[in-house]
Amino acid sequence: MSLINQVLKDLDKRRRHGESSADKGIPAGVEELSTPRALSNKSLGKFSFSTLGRWVLLLLLGILIGILTWQYLPSAKRWGLSVLGVQSRQEAEAKSTLETQYQLLETVLEQAAKPQQQGNHLLTLAATEQLVDTLEKTDDSSNPLPTPSSKTAVVELVSDLVKKTRELTPLERATQSYAQALRMAEHHDIAGATTLLQQVLDEIPEFQDARETLAAIYIQQKDTLKANELLEAGLAIDPDYPRFVSLQARIQVAEGKLSQALAMLSNLSPPVSEYPDYYAFLAALHQQNGDYLVSAKIYDELSAIQPDNGLWWLGKAIGLNAAGQPQEALKAYRHAQISANLTPPLRAYIDEQIKSLE
Image 1 (cartoon, rainbow, N blue to C red):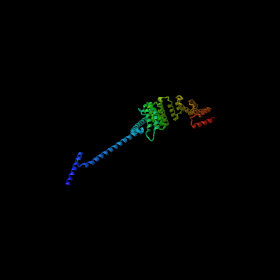
Image 2: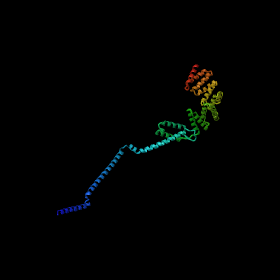
Image 3: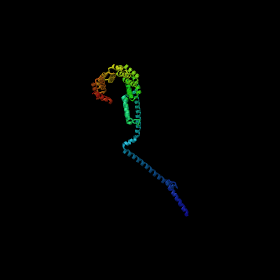
Image 4: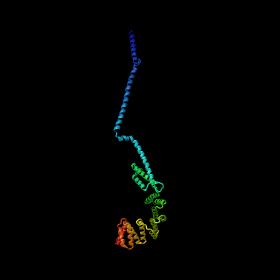
């Protein structure tokens, strides 16, 4: 009986426990399993909220640091960081532009070095020399191009000069070529100078300086045939040009024809002040021919217009002394002695003549 009562009590406990679980919406017998799961969900919620908060705090801290850095960093550095890439690109573009302009400059100079080519728009001779001087000053052996600042100055100079350039006239081209030929002759490039001078005469036969220079080169090379042909062509254009006559007389003297040379020179009477060398040559030939007083008279005219030229006084003294007028010669020697354009050997000769005449 007591065992039955105990079983009934157990059943009654289970019934009452089932009703209590039903009221909570939990099936009977599952309460033990549901309770740990609920605890786990609560822990997971706490964990997610904590991690999210940390990330938000880190984000806010980063924003704050950025604001403070931007606020207190010097503006020059701040903008330098932002435009560094732009500046590098601009510098590269500027360098490329300058190199292109410098190449154009080299092309201009190459054209300016060829004045004999017709139809070119060339720089004037003065402008070309100015450009060359500028390039020499900005030249850097370690760098084929000048520095950016000096290169900019050169490009600006070229731009200004190129604006002023125009096509040269035939006479201007000939003048440039003549100047270039003189420089070539000074550097002993006689063949190049001869070719260039002939080109000048082919273009402008009336260019007297070019003809005179080319004839003098032929005389120096003892090619009197070419020199005479050149001078005859020049005298056909201008029959009374003293310098052509003087060169022809020199050819006559070289061939031993002194009297013909004197007659040729005496046929002209150019102004002494404009052609002193012409008359000095004539006076020297008269001395060589024994016409001492005539020679002394010509030297006297030369010393009157150029009193500081000791050569004229010396020539006069030699002529007067040879003509038998030692006292007049002594005066002329003393004038020559105080002149400044005599070489030491000539001064020694003058001193000796003064001692012998005193």
